[in-house]
Length: 433
View 1 (cartoon, rainbow, N blue to C red):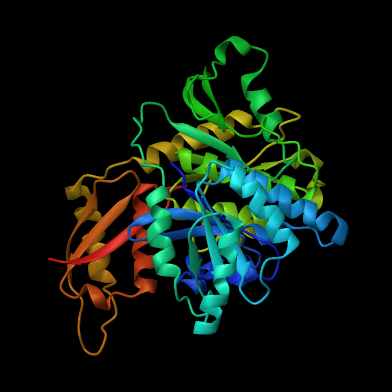
View 2: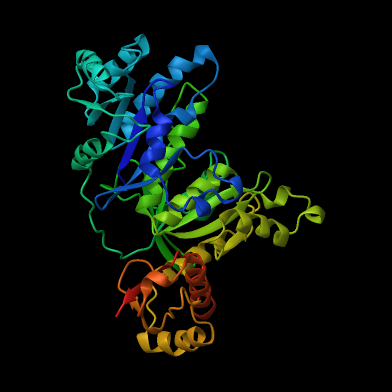
């Protein structure tokens, strides 16, 4: 179950700074790969063992003044509908503005938990200035400084109390979510899959009202399709269609086992797609990339191989993903996409016998041991797969702290070469015996 924390408020109150603080990744080198993810407006965060998705609504607002306030109000409405918890951010140095009042009105009517977060409180004078925000009628205040991070811990302790309890679902049928930016062909793909034989489609009652679950059974394949494509919210403001679809995508993605990411061949892998990709990877989902509208590409100047290389460059270091070139309109290779998803699903839950794992991996490790650090040699004795819903491996050794990232990647590549984990993120741990 996905818990989404949305940060709302007018511009310049510090939403992005708080967002960056909550989602801060120590692996910046991996995430900011060649400037691909500059405009991240959503990402994963973790507090005391609970994972959640944070959305900075500030990234989805029009620049023009007239649309501007309407867009912000509309975003608050969407956030109220879609998010688990809402952080309403205010600036202690400006007090309450008209727009703050408007936002508060909308939030007071909502049934969702709302936290009033007063930012830029970094001295005692400002602490007492913050009290004016009690008049918004939204309950307790959380005074923070998003620059220094003071107060964010107390805030998060309270926020996670409102998360929905994660229910372990039975994995009888694989769940695939078809995601991608608006107008990439998601609905057409679903219609092409289901065809005219509507009788095989049984939207299952009682599943979350946010996404339609379609039970698909033909051509030897059976799975649940999580469809967000058909759910179009009428938004008055063009920019908010993207914001809305991001909210929906996150929910669908977290429910799925395998994410089928559709991209438009005429546009390539855009930053929004890369964000979705990383979110799926962080959530340990299987991934298949479908390049749609391939019929529109002049074949002579773009081969599939060149196109694939571009995609893998942008998704690095996780590049072991099936990429299928389709044309939904011409019904080309649609089933190929579904077959790949089934294959990735199998890989996600695949278990390698310990004896086989050691027979193959130990000789490789012996030929290429981890480089010695400060004259200390790492000896890896034994490897086993940990029981989990996605591939995790424990390598037992004498000095786990000396095994560095490049060696981990080398081990991951060897596992992929020998056991086929295409489309699935792999976790590797080095542990003391």
